[in-house]
Image (cartoon, rainbow, N blue to C red; front, side):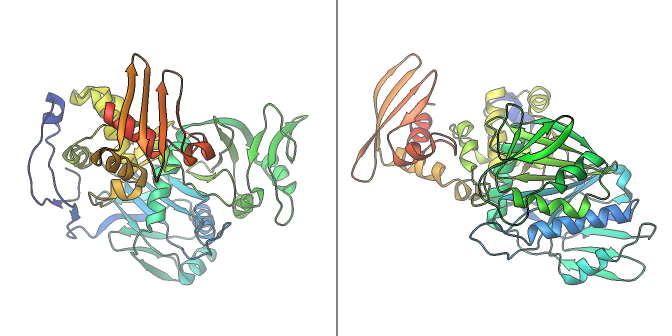
Length: 442
């Protein structure tokens, strides 16, 4: 059990292996937090000025939009646990993800419990943050129902609000992108300022690239072998408020060279900002997680693993498998289910996942992954016919709307004749037809 207590409805046990028994997995229709521990963390900030600048940057991100959705949110997610705090959020268009990782040395206080809340950063909070001076004493309280910031001039309380569903979808997707990234460049403070001085003015169209020439980093419209692509380069202006205080930055890029992230280092804390491939496209690649969700797992297993883990705790599936005697294939599926509900994040600098505790309902897995729901429907309606099956080769016919789609899965690729696969070629996850076939033969 975690430090928070939970009510369990309809308790039962389900076992498939010795490892699952060891987890003492309990099934429930819903997890509900008991509000008998109102506070997760209480203490002071050891570097309040830098912290305030980072919080203001987060507020700037979550109140911005670079796509068709107008700015409508100012609600960072706050996680307390494992001796650290994390503040994270998305732009309203879901195309920019931001997270502040506050290390143990950034805070001086007591962790009373582990948990997560979601609050507004309204004008009174922003005004208080903008007024914080370098040597000012600032007290922070993070609780289930609110977040308080107390300065020498003001006391601001922001109440808990509902976590937007599209943010949960974003949390599902962004950690997959981050886990696929490698560091490309490291810039010191002077190099960082020089780079941003060359940032194109206004809203510009087309791709830009961060490149290095004669020891100097700059933006260019031309790609080189070692350049990093920036889709929607104007989004980088969200970082301008911290350039004067940053120690150095790291620039990361995904293996497909479409998505990038910048990690700003402040010593006691890090600010990460990740950018979707283009301004008009949010972090909507939730289909990537479906590749390892083809096996039907009892939800009791998901709940059981959830009951063992704390907010911000490093999530190491290999060690969990070994310590609890769970086979790696089952753990992959468990991990994917946790990921599909927004319960996992990824730390680029540590190259490891961390756990994010969120109250959740059983239905969230299907609601956040409509292709998974539709694939199960294809199986239930007997709309899939396996035409040929041999070693390393599967061919199937799948009913569509007035058409039969052809699905082929071999040892080198998987393809379908549907419009989704034709349009994206697997870049946004597999289509429901391929997924249905894989579920049927698993």
